[in-house]
Image 1 (cartoon, helix red, strand yellow):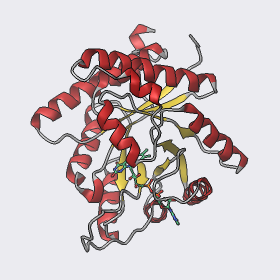
Image 2 (spheres, protein in one colour):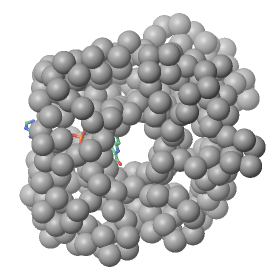
Image 3 (cartoon, rainbow, N blue to C red):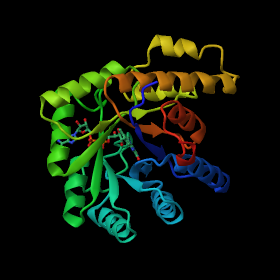
Image 4 (tube, protein in one colour):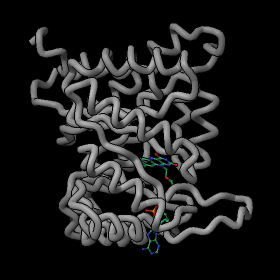
Length: 284
Ligand code: FAD
């Protein structure tokens, strides 16, 4: 086991009902002693989870010692709406925003949008307050992009506008990540590009999502889940093994920071962190 220090962050989504709220807090409390760099909360497309995201981010700030980061998407939003949200976060002490465009709705909903890209949101936010801005990056190319060159150009633009860190879309083949980082270095991109790690528990759903996001899932990995549809316990063990293997390869290539897409469940991320040497302080 490598002994170098690993830093982690965790992503949650806002709960939809009372039962989910209770479970979410249990999961947040389980991960808090690992002292993550930050914990981020997603924002539903078009502002659909607006209140819930804001409430959760503020509650995290109030009830824990964690540093929350609020995801914010701008598509289908007006400047007034975003300004209100930005001011509200700033005065509540939430100074870290994960600035995103969001998915463009497939149906024509005629909603006014003052923003076209995440870059528009970043420049708007930077004019309002001195937020720490984190952005997305896509090692396997975003479905709306024409080329990897476009990904680098957009990332460079985001950095020029003030982004200081990027988190990647989840991926399974670490070679895509390493290739993306090599290309970034060659193009003078210097900000940390943190790999987004998705511990897979529902293989079918992940395959569907991965297809939509242009993310390739190796056959070997799909085969590991075969025959486990009704065996959740074994699926979890397999998922932890796969994600650990991925992190281990990334560490061997020099990666020290990881962002876990927890899907609101602490168990897998906790187990993987434990193997990576990220343990509650009292255990050290
Ligand atoms: P952008 O970076 O704006 O890129 C979108 C497309 O536009 C790309 O093809 C890009 O090349 C192009 N583009 C960008 N800027 C320009 C420009 N200035 N000129 C020309 N072309 C440009 N979705 C949610 O709904 N809620 C979330 O909380 C959420 N969190 C996420 C967190 C992470 C770490 C990641 C990787 C994704 C997240 N998403 C979330 C998904 C994301 O909203 C979608 O992938 C969305 O389709 C793109 O958003 P973006 O900010 O990455 O887009």
